[in-house]
Length: 81
Image (spheres, one colour):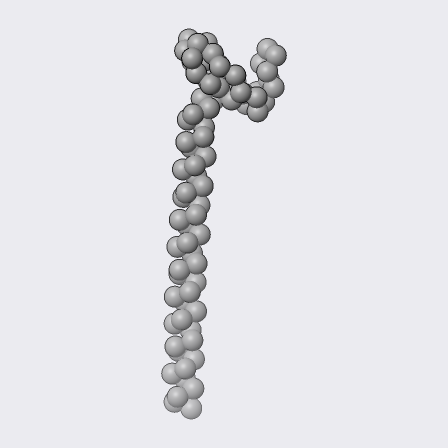
């Protein structure tokens, strides 16, 4: 038994709904791109969220480093003046 999330309407199911099917039916629906494996979809969504959080943290770190370098350059400029 596999839980599937529908991405297209099929039979009585609408996009976004989740239902359980035997492996053979599940494979048929996935191959037809009517549904996705719920467990795999959740895992992929988590991976995307983690990657986005890491990218944001790296961007914030780079921005802080650039601001620090600009402040240091401004301070050095003020000392020479």
